[in-house]
Image (cartoon, rainbow, N blue to C red):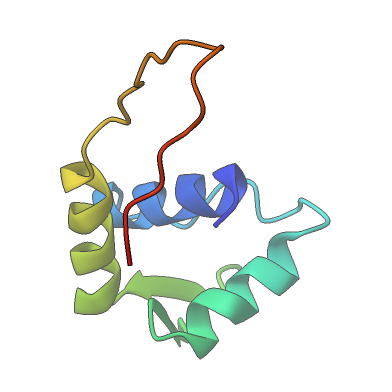
Length: 89
């Protein structure tokens, strides 16, 4: 997932309005991916000034919650002159 896609997911998880950067060149492909994967659904508005409104699905909310629960990575310090020990199979 790209930072742009994460931004879209976070937006729809926490806002009631449509994503404001829909004019970005990557928007159509991104919206299609979110729709195809069941993260957003599209509904049509009666006012022609607002032809599309995307709504988040429970799957999108679950995905964002999963992202928020992902632990930070840790770093393991090793001696550069020691060979890396691989686990025995």
